[in-house]
Image (cartoon, rainbow, N blue to C red; front, side, top):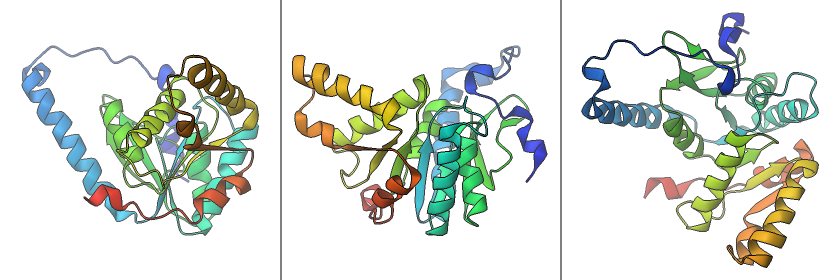
Length: 238
């Protein structure tokens, strides 16, 4: 374990504020477009080296010993033992737990990190990594080619990620065969009830069929039952 990596192992909301440098040509919209394009290219060049991946999402706030940290760590170890690489956002909390479990399972531990001005935000259990300036590009890469998406309890970022992926599957931009697994009934069942009763039932804003896209489980072992036979991501190669 590289302890130097842990220096900026912080939730995104706690990252140091970077003062903008005096503007030069890099502040132009034209240069920003090239930077965005280059980050997409770098990400797509990096990820195909990992043939079977599972993406982990969840709160960056949970420390070692937290129930969901330990469940994510356990799941990371289980899926690594089954030949899956664990891909996370490379930060603390659930991300750290997934990467840590992958190493403990002698598997591949991958982090898609966020760049700071001179360093990277990264947890000490990431084995292989690449980094992005833009959060939205990292989010695309976390969905790229994964055979399953696993969501532990989390905050705004986690909810943003789960609803975006559900929307992509609902609109057939991503195959409906890819499991979306929500771990933690005490956290996710109230969300499910709101979707069932209010969003679908009262407002009819989603179809009843759309509520079958995700599965709610309560343990790493239950989650793995949906992951183990997940098909390859052929939809990314059209």
